[in-house]
Length: 62
Image (tube, rainbow, N blue to C red; front, side):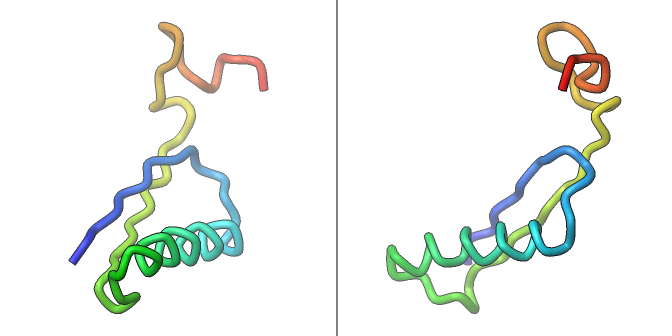
């Protein structure tokens, strides 16, 4: 059973998360994995806990 872990910035809506889960599941179905075998875990990470270019993502321009 595939387990897909998505690390993303906090702030995604429930609808966006549902769309992401459906899309990932659909991609696995296209290669022959049934939906009941696919697990998707979304980790919401605050931008203050995410570093890019040597600084916190929260300090970068949008």
